[in-house]
Amino acid sequence: MKRLLLPLVVSFVAACGPHSPKTSAEPESGQTFEQALGLMCQVDQMAGLDADDDPIGVEGARVDWIHQNVDNGDAIELFTLMRVKSHTEQAEMMRRHTQKANIAECALADTLTEQASVLD
Image (cartoon, one colour):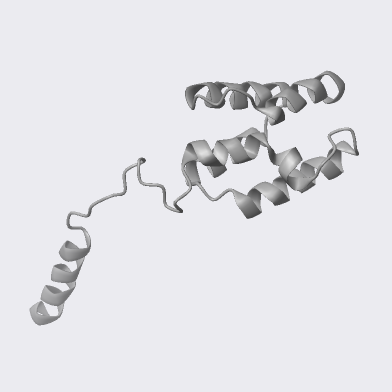
């Protein structure tokens, strides 16, 4: 019985040993948070969307385009969190993050602010 436990214990200890976790400065995809945020800000233009079209259709197209083109984990997390917020809160979140990233303009935040007066 002891002979069976020893390899199991050794394997477990080796698996729990020290690992070098990735730091947030190392983008998993090669796409930085700032690059991903810039893409998100320009989603309507890049995807050929008209914000004045059907809001549900535009929102779905935005989601699809962002899922296909944004692959930075932090930006995906931000986008996921935004989806459960009102348009006003989404715009505020985008502005807060773009300001921290030194992105001067964000068309998506502007559009979300405009839509908030109609949809929220």
